[in-house]
Length: 451
Ligand code: UD1
Ligand code: CA
Image (tube, rainbow, N blue to C red):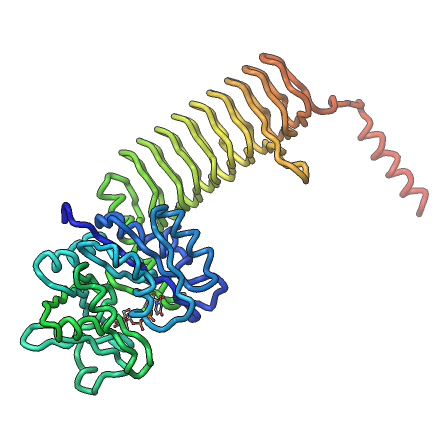
């Protein structure tokens, strides 16, 4: 593939009505990443040198997602849905600029691997003008059938246009197509709409290439590679396939997972060596786990950086901006958001640490709350190195607790505390000797009189 230029055209103008959602189909997520982002990642990894994304009218959010993932992608709007062949021609300018290979890929086929895209391009290297992916689904209903003659692909017939005999063919069209750049426009512009749906079918490119005396090729792949998403149920099936792949890759990289089927990963989750992930852990996007860390059961992590040998959970929640330095510990029912824990710092039970930085070796006692929100704005607090926050304390942000300071249990801290100070942020305990006994005696007397 080296030295060959490749234009990838991603078709994403569909409404996705069967998803029953206000959100455009390609913006639904698998493993914490949009369907469109999965496809664009495959395109990039397959060595694409240019990309065009065809979006529906008014689908500004789809265009924005495409630009976010692949800033160099050009966006073309298809204002009227007139078929896959019509959609591809929305990117006519890009095709006319000339590329060795043109790959057409659907935005709702997110499990396709870069390797499969490369195989498809490989057929062009071997002289084909049009190459498609074939697969044998358990149920071929709704798919185009690959028509072959003496082993040569001569046409693709959409189900609605197929004869009973053609419908009996089990080899179906995966939807993706590679076209030789030199012939692509000529072929695509010959596609008409003389068919059952009165649509311009991209699939007609195969028969047209044959009529022009050009070579075609079909490459058979696993169903998972070309699994299309049309419904929420298919979205869940694809999620299962992807999770299996991600767990496998994590274990191959050395992560210990006693019950991998209960762990949910994001497409971008990164693990160092000798990491353990216990059962029932969920990773949202943007998580990095460094060497030797242990993530205990029932923890939920998103946008978090977990340093070497850190212990998280069970039942911990790390939200975006949580950063745990080496050897720190976050225990059960502790939540962190936009908060740093220094080396060896501990928050072992029942705490909320939001918009804060906690110095190395500091101890955050059970029930500590960083009161970061006053109803209008968020404020940050700092806890110095080696400080000790006694149980059930409230730190009313913004406050600074100096290094080595000691906050007594049950304190409400509203002002800065100097280094090495001891602070009682609560009322002193008042003891009245024998008062309880006297009150009981009085009550008993009252009852007697009342009789
Ligand atoms: C298509 C293939 C069929 C194949 C199947 C595999 C054609 C004519 N048929 O059928 O042979 O078996 O995929 O899943 O290509 N799109 C646009 N604009 C349009 C029409 C479609 O952007 O005007 C996009 C859709 O958003 C979607 C993709 O193209 O991402 C495929 O369109 P869809 O209508 O789902 O094609 P199928 O009928 O499934
Ligand atoms: Ca489809």
